[in-house]
Length: 156
View 1 (tube, rainbow, N blue to C red):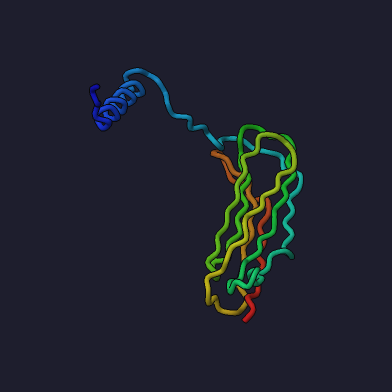
View 2: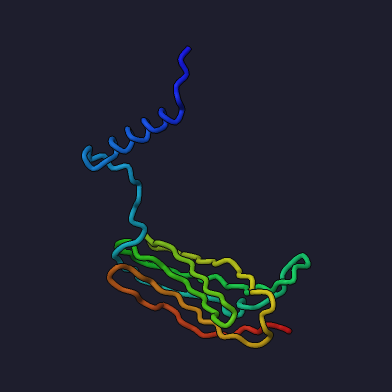
């Protein structure tokens, strides 16, 4: 019974795959797809419930506060190409930048719901500015659908 060296076998397999999938054979082994691209959409309405933007204590006895982020709801009409919706909530005073994106390919209602964000322990009490922006973007342009400035209060 001959025992083969497993390292040599793996080495031979790696070389075969590299040669087989190399530029000389023309075989494309990548499966990357374009997730967004050129295009545009008719936006019928944009809604963000800013009253839901708040800092609340953590659950289950944790000693961490959370910035609770509202969802954005965008109603879209006709779409050309593959633009994407971008929802950005930025609170630099407490170190929070959350981005939620969605590629849109057809009309309908899209809901973007970023996760809540824990604040750093020891965040100072006070009021902090929060910028809320909803955009539609593609390779050919970037259009702001909604931009608002809010404040949240971190309790002592």
